[in-house]
Length: 95
Image (cartoon, rainbow, N blue to C red; front, side, top):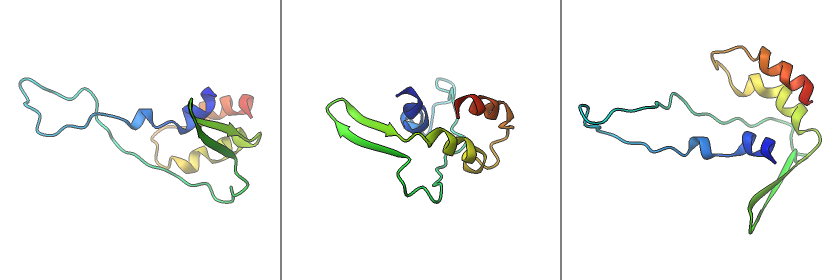
């Protein structure tokens, strides 16, 4: 469950956006640098299914989901400004 929330949850993008801050009294603590989304081709066999229940949106990932993420993480974040090598080491344990 935590894996699916980490990959697909939108809470990180739910931010308060303001404009025209009164500089002597207000200053931004964070700055949104960029946002993006990616669609991985050839995933029509439903790597993750979800349904809305009383408990919220419930995901059911397929067994191939971790490998799909590991194989496509670099393509989904072009120019991310960092090497994905340490992350890939974690993927090898995960996949």
